[in-house]
Image (cartoon, rainbow, N blue to C red; front, side, top):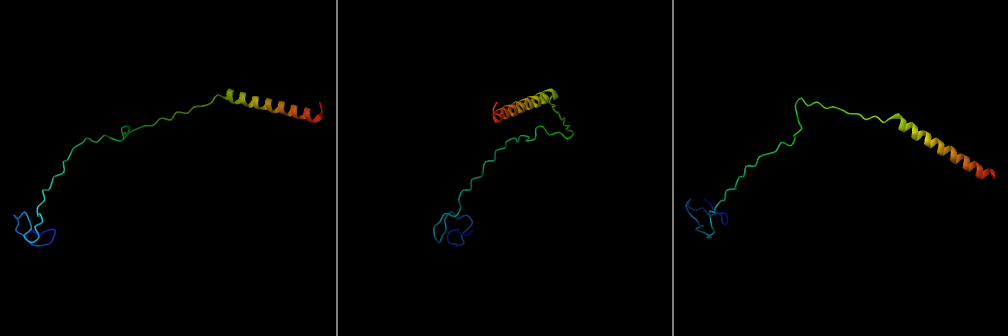
Length: 88
């Protein structure tokens, strides 16, 4: 066994270096291994997974109602602006 401090060769059963006096064998603490269960990250994964798509359709009555309202407001603004410029 060699000393980590000075490199001197020492007997295998030596605790301290015969040259520099440094401690040769340090108690090696074994790391404690803790087994923890691993959760499946893909809980929704299925080999034969089928996806369904849902589509939402807006009713055409709300679209046409807003279109009519915009046209009425536009016509009203045109009427007001033309009245202001004509001196009415």
